[in-house]
Amino acid sequence: MDSGSPDASAVDVAIIGAGFCGSMVAVNLLRKAKEIEVALIERSGSFARGLAYGTTDRSHLLNVPAAKMGAFPDDHEHFYRWARENPEELKRQGVNAVEPHSFLPRVLYGRYLAGLLDQSGAGGSLRRITAEAIDVAPQANGRFRVKLRNAPGLIAQHVVLALGNFPPGDPKLRDQRYHRVERYLVNPWSEETRKKLAEAGDVLILGSGLTGLDLLLSLATLKSQGTIHVLSRRGLFPKPHRTVKPFASFLDQKSLPRTARQACRLIRAQVKQAEAGGIDWRAVIDSIRPYSQQIWRQWPTEERRRFLRHLKAFWESHRHRAAPEVLEVKSQLEEAGRLRCHRGRIFSIAPEKEFLSVQFRDSNDHSDRVLRVGYVVNCTGPECNYHKLTDPLVVQLFSRGIIVPDPLFLGLDVGLGGTILNLQGERVTHLHTLGSPQKGILFETTAVPELREQAAELANRILYQLEHRQNSQKLDQSEHAAVAFQI
Ligand SMILES: Cc1cc2nc3c(=O)[nH]c(=O)nc-3n(C[C@H](O)[C@H](O)[C@H](O)COP(=O)(O)OP(=O)(O)OC[C@H]3O[C@@H](n4cnc5c(N)ncnc54)[C@H](O)[C@@H]3O)c2cc1C
Image (cartoon, rainbow, N blue to C red; front, top):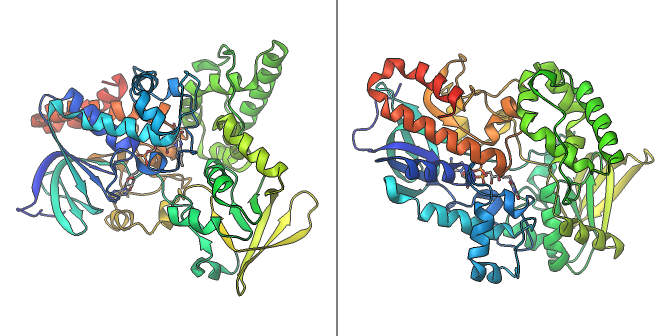
């Protein structure tokens, strides 16, 4: 335990990370509290945007229709209405009209969130701190000292780790020297990466998920010479969204599938039945969403592992769909011969003089193939295994024994409601998380429709605990009640 620094300033809640999750916890706290001091700590200097909505490329679209992207759980159309009421903002991003099913630029969503944060001050004070949090030290009095790089620290009663997604993990190859080569690009979201990929010459995108699609969109306009290659294990891209008639849910609490295989069979049968009635498969997938966290939670670890091994890639390409106009750009690039998609397993990336030579086994004909490309960019999805992260805060929290990964290394070990569990499996009272770190216990915890619920619930729970702080002995029990009743 740290005895704390007497000169550090004190707040009720310190939130580390100001992407959607951190910013919306702050907005909810400030809207609901009568009096509260919140510190929102963000290392990038850009508040309320995070990785997803911090893009400056307006061709990057939301992958959820406008009418479902509201930031509050009780008002799903909030963003849609905001967009309609702000035609000037739309025009600036090249959008002429907005419909409930429009897929709007993500830049616009960042503006919406920034506006919410700006207007949230009524119930207390918000301190925006541009700095990197590098340590959270529990103190003897039950508070935390938050240490910041090159800035004075803070004392906080509650700390929220809203750290979001980390850059992709590198492929496990026998020869790992490619890591250190400048032509191997590890940050698919940076401006610099886009510039390099736009240079003349062939390039390779590793991974065919939503991030890979983002890059294709940017390169469609930025890159005039050279072939873009995309390589992924299964060759699956996100499926296109379509407006569909809803499908009545076929699940209820008592009939949730007990195994991954059972789930797969059930979905297939339901899709067949729906299609016979003229209903699109997308409606069947969407009808599962209210139950997906429950299904995941009731599966034992081995069953979850089975799902990850055999079904995850298929589930994700159907579940996390892309705007149809995005996939249209991909088809146009393919038809023009500017894009080639490969299905296979990479086994080496060898630096040559002016190239990277990439060897992979093509899954279509099992032949070994070589691509010579100017750059390789890793878009294989965020690294979820916290043990592999070199992020200073994560490393420090590990060394304190405050965090541990969940058994499947999808995120952190957390209790229901996002309370961090330490090395001993005990709840670290008043240290919370939400979003991606909860993947191990919830699986479905990535997109706004889930995150807005979590942000509002966590804010409610923190407020409840702050109000009842005098009676600290009863805190743990009241926490359980708060989660159960979602107060
Ligand atoms: C490219 C992309 C597109 C997406 N598109 C959509 C979409 O259209 N619709 C949808 O519903 N979901 C989308 N998502 C899912 C997205 O993850 C969530 O919607 C949401 O943005 C996640 O927010 P977050 O706050 O958890 O994480 P992030 O946005 O990653 O924010 C975390 C923040 O924490 C900061 N941070 C981390 N560590 C520290 C530290 N130690 N000190 C200080 N600051 C720190 C980071 O700088 C970052 O700003 C997308 C995701 C990505 C990656």
